[in-house]
Image (cartoon, rainbow over all chains, first blue to last red; front, side):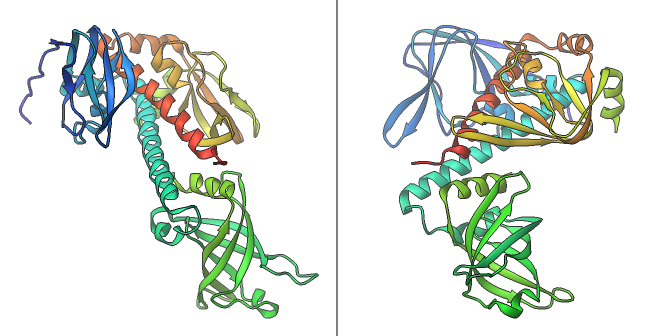
Length: 255
Length: 134
């Protein structure tokens, strides 16, 4: 690659009320306020809301460092009074990142990976929250299935929804999990005394790999018989889950 | 791996801890950085309505690095709890400082801004994850 010239650090002046950058624009600059004040502004419909107030020494536009400038600005920044900023070109910061001493770079990389993951989880939560507000909390499991599916091997206990006295807990192994339902492998002997056909409902309890216990109700959607000697595989859908357990499951499935 | 070899030069001391030991406590002050050498640990964060696991650390992963990278008030953002027995290495702070001192002022400011953002977003996510009622 040809040697790039890195733009120097520049001082820029903005008048009170000027936009320094606009939500939706692409940029390759990170800024530091040298003098003055500015507001971070989000557009909500045709209304502007103030998300943060910035003063001397504050850095903004830093998200371009995470996205390498490939994503548009997520908010606008407007000078609140006559303001002087230092502009740092992304290439300058990337070069310094490339030249970091290795152990520091390892530490920073770990933090950046976590930051990206947390931003992703947050936006999923916010999307989920919005969808839940729109549709009420009960239905939209099926539509979410493929987004959250995770392969695991976790023991679970289950039993028919209306247990007759003396019905023992049955044991199965959850092979995959999603917000929509579980894939569960069971011993074929479980079906000798209890019906296991599509449509049957069970109460199920398991401990997630992160240590949280969840209880919920499932319904058999499909049964596969050829998964190994004496084993069956049930595809199930979640039909009832408390809000607490739903959050626990959701959080586990999100990373 | 190259980083692991390099890391060994930075390790000032090694410690072993049994399962469930609190290796670092959220809210405590401290500036030391550790690296997991053997075993795993959970990173947990308190929210108003409960505690959530936000990460799992494996050998080669650091903890305490946020306080160091911020070079600020050094409040621990999360707790780290051993998941089974672990062996950890304490990093030589002087060596890390020598490295840190090679950074330009603007890069230091960028790093502390990003770490500040990580603290805030992690807090929001923990709240969203534990928010159960309403």
